Amino acid sequence: MLKELVFAGLLFSIVLLAGCTQQQPVDVGPTCEDYCSGLDHVDCVGSWSISGEYPDCVCEWVCVAGGSDVITGCTPNWTCTDWSGCVDGVQTRTCTDVNECNTTTDKPDESRSCELENPCDDVSDSDIKSECNVIFLEDASYCEDDPYSDCVYDLAKLTLNESLCEEINNSFKRNTCHAIVSNDRTNCGVIQPSLRNLCRTTFDVYLSSRAVVEEDSYYCGLIETETVKDSCESNVEKVQYYNYTNNHTICERFSFTYNISDYQEIYSCYAYHAKNSDDTPCEGIKNVVNLSDKMYDECLALRNDDISYCYDFNSSRRDRCFAHFAYLRDDPLVCRDADNRDECLNIVGKYFSKIDYCKRISSKSLRNSCIHSVSTKCLVYDWRGCNVSSCTLIDDNNALKDACIFNIIEYNQEHSFIYKRLV
Image (cartoon, one colour):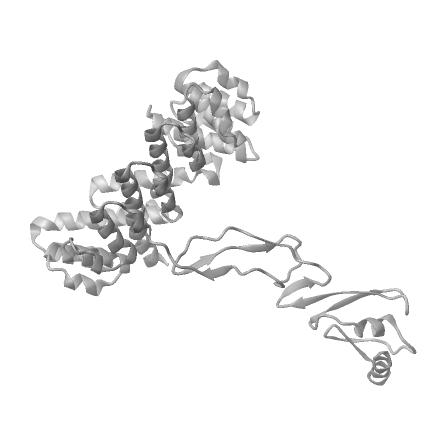
């Protein structure tokens, strides 16, 4: 092999290096270039890094394959995220090589087929289960006890199939169906006058949903019904607010209206960034209308991990303080020193979407309420992130469990049809 390479070099004055053709001076006798090019290597375009003199040659090379630098001699170490939910029969995940070898060698699969489980099977009430199946499976055959027109109306919206609208006998629903599926309000003008406003209101509700899906208040401005417009703008603000994980400055955009839920949401925003942000978010608290200095003080305590601050409080104030430190430290045992352990766990579960904290609550009713809140919180700010399986954790309350499952399925499917239109 070596003699052949030397002969080829002398005859053509060209040495083939790792699939590259490079001009080299003609040498008499073996060289490291000759030696290295005769070794097994990846056959791709690239360059040699050769040192030493024959026979003490050091041969290394980097080659370019598929537009990426592939480092030979590097062993990839793949780590993968958890599998996603089953969407259209496919689960996905992302796999990365922590050694950054820039190769796909031995890369694990990032997609696989799956069979979508029907969450409606966990619904106890037969009527709700029937309606749930219609929505989830997009199949009118499950509408045995429902008016046929209602089923077709729902399916037309979900599948964006306007031809189904013509199968609806009721003129109001038929034309409302056309208006929504075709995204054209003028269809509301071809029904009896007494129902035109209701049709337009229904269309406005669709625009409101679209504003939430796109997180864009532009669509709120297209709404004619004042009450729907007001709620639209409020819901878009909530969506942006609930996504406070993106930037702590979102925390200071909202005013406190002496509503305990608003108070806790704003508090949770700062508690999140006190734990997860590199910068200091506490100064922004001073910009939130009507908030007391105590929130600023607690933010600093969280930033410094000074739990002694909480022991100066009683009742609900103490519960909230310990809840934030439980979240900060990822330790539910912190709630033992709260005034009400269950309420402390409930705050962490509900406001930080930590369902494991909900499961630790001793009171069954509060535990179920916490699980329901976490499970359906996605309906407010992230309809694609709903986890309907958590609804089944609700214990000994079929009505609440059924409502949890159905509301998620209905909301998800309705917003999904809007999302399909957008993409």
